[in-house]
Image (cartoon, rainbow, N blue to C red):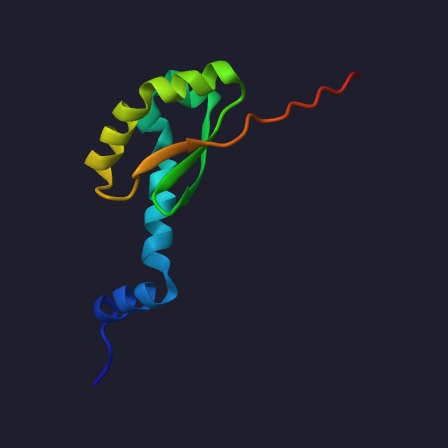
Length: 101
């Protein structure tokens, strides 16, 4: 009896961890919408590790804004991806390298 793709693909994704990778990718890609234009312009969601969304920020001012909006961001993620994002953490501020030309 031949295998049907609609039966094989979900099982293959589950075995390869693809379903979780896909979900993680969708969570990261949704950052711009969830965070909004202003916050997303200065930040970047870079990882989702055990329910903690890691966001890079350029400076302490933006880090404070992220802290201030944290609960609203968590609510928005819960609406879109139930149970995926339990907390938002920020990575250390990016180091900026200036090159004089």
